[in-house]
Amino acid sequence: MKFRGLIFANLFRKKIRLMLTIGSFAVALFLFAFLAVVRSAFSRGAEVAGADRLVVTNRIGLIQTLPISYQDKILTIPGVKAVTQNHWFGGVYQDEKNFFVQFVIDPDNMLKVMTEFKVPPDQWATFLQDRQGAIVGAKTAQRFGWKIGDRIPIIDSLYGPTKTWEFNLDGIYHNDRPGGDETQFWIQYKYFDENVPDFAKGTAGWYVLKLDNPDDAARVSKAIDTMFANSSFETKTETESAFAAGFIKQFGNIELLIEMIGMVVFFTLLLVTGNTMATSVRERISELAVLKAIGYSDRTVLVFVLAESLAIAVLGGVLGLGLAILAIPVLGQALNGLLPSLILSPGILSLGLLVAVLVGAVSGIIPGIGAMRMRVVNALRRV
Image (cartoon, rainbow, N blue to C red; front, side, top):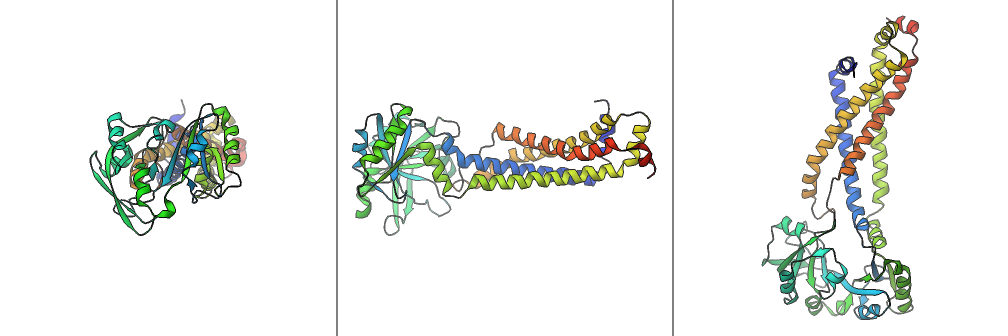
């Protein structure tokens, strides 16, 4: 751009104001990126859910269990390919801060249904032969520095008095889906069932089933709920994505909260940048009038103001997003176990830069139009 020298000269006229405005932009864009990452983390379970899987829970809610006998009955329904059951374990490792998801699983059917989880065959074979065996996700193993063969104590108070269960780490699983969960800890159902109080024996927390055809989801869901209607343990069957979305809502309306905060960030940026540009134009009325007097067009004056606003927005946006690239992995490591994995995707970075450009354009357009419509004679009278 042939006028870039003039534009940058005007930008750096008030260096402290420029730095404060760019700093405000950077902080706001960092906050925007962090909120977008948190929103993505909470919704990722629904996004990666299998289209050919259904989840069966107690109609009252997840806190209520189902009989273990339901597994064989569900398998008789046409269209059901495989069924597995899970139980929430809910213990902690050494300290309450060391929380991570622990499931009691059905090892005979788990990998038939949850096909995205990959465990080396030799490790899985060892796990099947070990009642006290455990399989852990790669991220949780890395978090605690666990390795195959370690003895893992888990403190549990959910099933009776506080008790320490000890497990042999037989394997580490990976997830072949982008953004898939690698934080779970699996233990064997038979070992669990042998050691829990009578009220928990012979129960399942929920069932996950794999369909022959995803198009059969509605029919199979209705068939399952009809089968157990009017029983002591009625069921609610839904797609895995609907189940994941419902689970997220237990934390509150995260999406609405983040969108509201994002709107506040957007309008704050708009006000800060708009005020900066309006003040800058007021300070330079006589200079802009001189530019018009010597032949610069109204459109060129508008371009000057918009270019300054966009430069501030882009500089602040790049700085804020760069900070997010460096800081979010560190924050994700610090919050490991408290939030799902924080992943700063290229899409979030692109959206953040687009927001910065949009704010820069909107905040510069009103002062720019004012400068464009300014009459030379009236402006020079203020000199």
